Length: 339
Image (tube, rainbow, N blue to C red; front, side, top):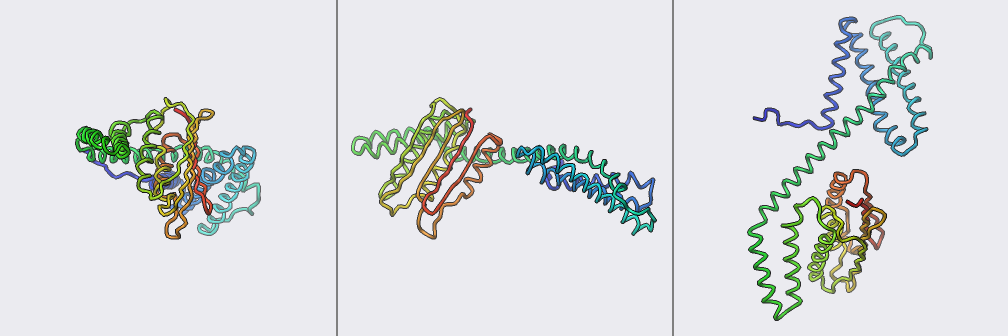
């Protein structure tokens, strides 16, 4: 029996962590000092710890360390710790004087610098804190991806109503139609191949690149019949067909072309697609004209957002995804490491 079904978010976990830290500090000092002094000490120190931790993991670390500016990072960490320590010391002394009416010696810089060393340990803990946040974020994203995958597989199973019966029926129709209309028969064959891909290949973790390209070409051939004047598609291919990649990884760009980049009233729709293997990477690029209608415009939408999340799960930071668009052209570029 599952007793606890509620899952905490990353923010909720952090809030609970800081509440626990504040309570620990407060009750550790309460036996030695009165309630007010313990409360002041707790608020000042918890706030100081939070400033150091979040200042490092949200500002200094991503802006300097991750961008290889190690010297600047080291200098700014020292300056930041000195500033945080001095601020903590000044706040503590002033609050004690105000709330407890304690007479203290005149505040001087040497006195305030005595609060700095305590921040060094908190800085080290900020690195651990950052790793913990990254772990829980990744774990949460993984669970969401797995849930989406399970739902997609369930939907796929629901949609597979006797697939072999459908394949056999399409093959029978193909042979009947081929005698009178070979072109239409070819389209039926492509549709059969697409359905077979969805059933047999899409549930796999990786498929041969040649299989993925065949699926894309079948999809484009069927989409082209809906375009009044057709479309001119230049598909450059230069790769090892035995290479493998996750299924349906490139389809988001192809779908966007036919959804947002084809003007059915235009007599000439030019599309260029490039799929090239180079230096251990697979480079995929699509370029199409944008539709001039002010009511229809090509956007990244949920497809690109979902693709980005999937790429992060598959490749971490080892991929490159760029979307460029001007008044006339829309260009998508994807670079992924080879499996």
